[in-house]
Image 1 (cartoon, rainbow, N blue to C red):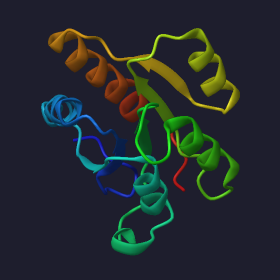
Image 2 (spheres, one colour):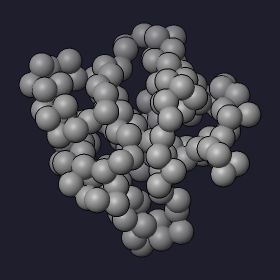
Image 3 (cartoon, rainbow, N blue to C red):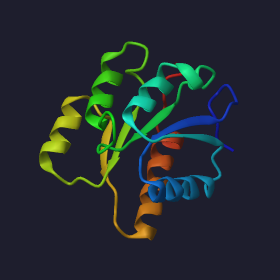
Length: 148
């Protein structure tokens, strides 16, 4: 199994409010041979609490990768992305925007906010699973990520 050089599982934070997309992402990741831990939060406020290890997230690990939806309740994904990339302790965590939006202004804005990539969620179930597997393969087996 692939893991970080420390031998620990790769931690992925999924920021997603759609239970169906959460389930599909879990299924796609669990079908891989990669040792990973998926942590899920349903909105932008919870995402930032998780990342800052506040409240119920005080003992949670810092993620190696963040999968971020844009259209979130409480605090949207653009705001969360801006906060992540402005924080010296968080800015090196790769953020993959995984959203239904195909709007050019969303794509442009997220790259201006330093998203590492922008992926549009396919409507088709099989294609969605393939997209998640591709993200996992690229970001967690091919790319060399910083240890902190």
